[in-house]
Amino acid sequence: MMLEHLGEKDAGEGIVRAIERVLAEGPRTRDVGGKASTSDVGKAIAGAL
Image 1 (cartoon, rainbow, N blue to C red):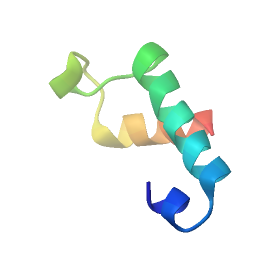
Image 2 (cartoon, helix red, strand yellow):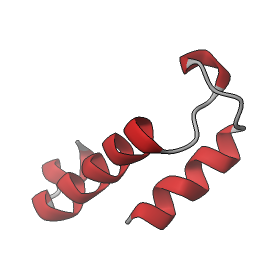
Image 3 (cartoon, rainbow, N blue to C red):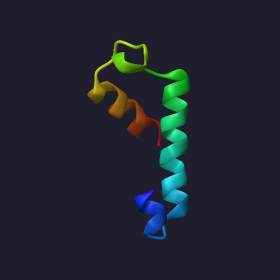
């Protein structure tokens, strides 16, 4: 949302898509039924970009 506010709509949408892709396919943290660490999920999101 901050990127959209700053006029970077495409970048913001890209990050949201990467997060959605990782939540659907990739590692998940324990709070959403997975076993991955926050760092692991962050790395997966960065890789999805």
